[in-house]
Length: 158
Image (cartoon, rainbow, N blue to C red; front, side, top):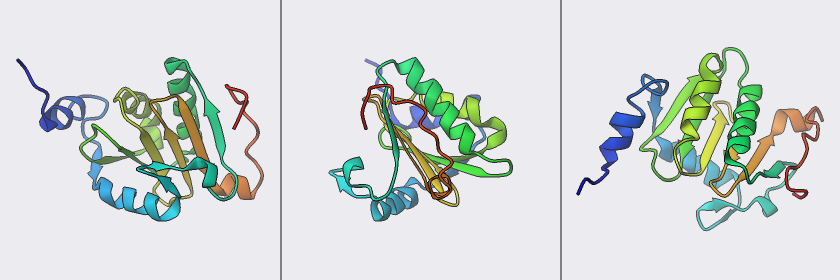
């Protein structure tokens, strides 16, 4: 019987395009920051207790969720900016990428079955995608300027 090892994710998934060659980073630093910034229930962000505004959608269709999440991350990945990604399950480390390759990287990362955390390297925004179909966004700069419009809740509630 063939068993999947930790090296499978590092060598096969992160070793093939478009993920190969991405800068790898220590995911514990990002998870430590998340735990200091957001209230939690167990190991997940307790979105009901997040102070200030945040956007939330519940999207049952996986392809629609991936498309919307990709759009939202790429919208925030400004020219010359860096995006960090960590996953809370199968990803062996975090990765960094730029807006130039954003769409293909986000789409490929979302293929990994885990909760995904995409953050601006300056921590001005975060996009979280859950395997249960939730898309949550905290975009402090856009909220402060009241530029984030209502893109439409796909489930009818926040």
